[in-house]
Amino acid sequence: MARTVTETAPADLQLMCASAAAAPSGVDSAKILPTGSRRVDARTFNVDLDAGGRKFACLIDDSGTVTSVQPA
Image (cartoon, rainbow, N blue to C red; front, side, top):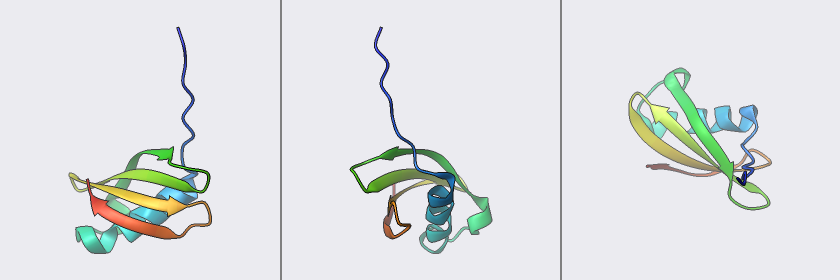
């Protein structure tokens, strides 16, 4: 049986994504929850978000720059 290792985004980057999703979702950032994350490449993470039942995907780099927030 093989295991795969997935690197997740640090908590501070996940929270930055939640804040960035507030405007496009119309939901208070305190009510947006990160539900998962994974490294996309050497500098970028994809963070899955739940904004009051609506799903969003956020791309953020390791320096905290949000490059996109899109409905998932």
